[in-house]
Amino acid sequence: MTQAGPVAIAAAAVLDDGAIVEVRFSDGRARRFPSLWLRDHCETPDCLHPETQQRLVDVFAFDAPVLAAGAGPAEGGRTLRVVWRSEDHESRLSADLLAGVDDGGAPETARSLWPDAAFPDGLPTVPYAAVRAGDAGMLDWLETVERVGFCLVDGVPPTPDATRDLAERIAYLRQTIFGDFWDAAANMEHADTAYTPLAITPHTDSTYSIDAPGLQMFHVIEFDGEGGESVLVDAFAIAEDVRRDHPEAFAALSTIPVPARYLEDGVHLEARRPVIRLDAAGRVEQVSFNHHDRAPFLLPEAEQRAFYDAYGLFHRMASEPARQLVFGLRPGGVLLFDNWRTLHGRLAYSGRRRLCGAYHNREDFESRLRTLRRSQARKAA
Ligand SMILES: [Fe+2]
Image (cartoon, rainbow, N blue to C red; front, side, top):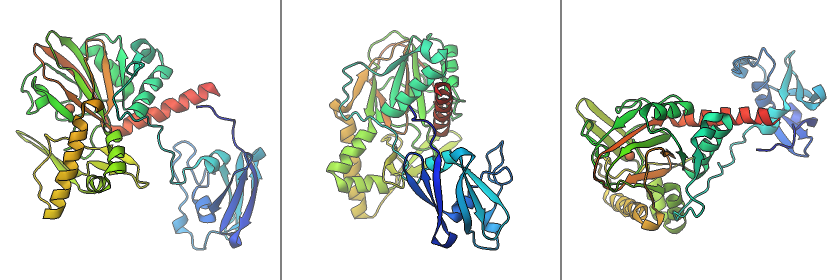
């Protein structure tokens, strides 16, 4: 990301009898801030802890209404200075905060959807050496996953240790009923089709988990048979196609909570959420789709019909060959994908196939992206 240099505060005016402060920035933009908001976000050391960045001021304990008496640029425009009517305190707020604060219409992550699974320039791939070399390679890998929904790493030593090390370079691993790192040949260690050589239709993992893992990583470290190709489908592309072409199905999929469960001896996990979960602005935030793990539930008749129509449509779209990216995973090629977006499946196989992998929490993926971006921006500055 390139930046045109820091934005400064050019001027400020107290409006609305002290209730509003309008700030004009050096780039010509103007923003209005309620005085209560400014007092709540004051950045002096007694209001915002300088080390932890945690709020210390409590505007809800104030007796008098918060009204500005005066406001203007300070420190060469790097901060806004505000003085108050009923309080002897001089507030400071940085230009960075005022210019950059999210106004609720957060810019959508630059997503690149692939309704047709065509990658004429090859699948998104980063070299193992680049990921290990430092933050730039790691950021490139994770930003590709954020944008496209998956990315491969090639040249990884086909060992569990190297795979685990690579996964831990992203963030600490998610602990689940399968452990934190799995290393499995076909067996029935767990009551799950993933542990058999059968075909698995495209799905997201852990629909039965309240907080489904945000990332999943696979590495086939041994394979001596036939088949077993991975299948990936962009579920966000399906969601947008359904929204455009089938509004009734979209309404059903984005509002009817679907229960899912996982049962094995001593375990009964259960969670429910709509197939398409939207954020407050109506953007698709998460797809949860797993036909195998859906739990029994009964709806009123008309709603039940609407659900089956919509779920069947989504299922058929996920099975369309044109939407399915099918490729062989071989030792050395690690696949990392967004488990809130990209459906994954597998064709049946013969022979011995040893697969290892791990999950990461969504929040740790996002945290790593933020810290990597900050460190790269600092280097570029
Ligand atoms: Fe899976």
